[in-house]
Amino acid sequence: MSILTAQTLTIGYSKKGKTDSIQSELNLELRTGELVCLIGPNGCGKSTLMRTLAGLQKALFGKTYINNKNIDNISLLDKAQLISLVLTDRVEIENATVKDIVSFGRHPYSSWWGNTSDEDDDIVNEAIEMVHLGHKRDHYINELSDGERQRVMIAKALAQETTIIMLDEPTAHLDLPNRVEIMLLLHKLAHKTGKAVLLSTHELDLALQAADRIWLMSSGNKGIECGVPEDLVFNGSFNRAFESKSYFFNASNGNFSMNYPMTKKVSVSGDKTRMYWTLRALARAGFMVVEDAEIKILVHENEYQIENMKIPTIEILLDELNIKLNEKTV
Image (cartoon, rainbow, N blue to C red; front, top):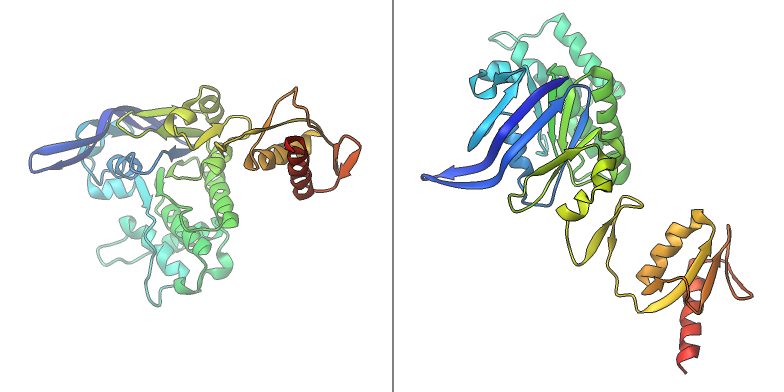
């Protein structure tokens, strides 16, 4: 079910009577129970779009609707009960525990004096458990790792009990294990709670695996392509959005591959499991793989073979290839 829609939206900035449009004619839909990843090059307008959709920044043109109601006509209190926003800013509050931080999510529902009820405490504790931090409930925020801090902020958003959660670069500054954990957590939360989760990210490989839908934004006011990740791979959207002479989007594995200058030729066949990594190493060393090359490599499960020579590792394989090429040029 659609919870948020944007119609002919133009985002950007207005200053001293002049407008600077970053993206225009955007028609977007955010559905409940889905994780949507907003992806695009630096400077294309991802953060501006997030702020505009959250009602923190005025659109230059067009409208955003939540539950069919124009966001411009929704009060700040009601917005806080509809949208929770997690930013990349590092939270530094001295002597604040995990529970203290997550409790801030109950502010839109608290009394004038900020008092919370037993029900609020139950909601806070449940949010902490959902991000697997129950054992750190009473720890100070400055005692936590970066990954744990990010989970605290997600718990705060959950405690806010909004239908929509927006996160701006939630995996920034995290190591790989924590990036994977956060993306999996958000995917599970969207499906388990029925919330609409929108996050901006540069983690294309993780987004391709975790996102139910991707909003792919291009630079230069070229708009957004929306769809299931695999459809955007098949139709070439990623190569168009990240067009470069230095690299290309490899549709066969979902990664970006560098455009190495390849001046040497080999033929490769054999075990498919080792093939991917073998081809990567050969490309990096400047080898182009062609069917009719004079030097032929046979890839076995645990070794390589050139003519009658058996080779145990890629490192030795590359050395032997260079030796053979040198022999042919002498």
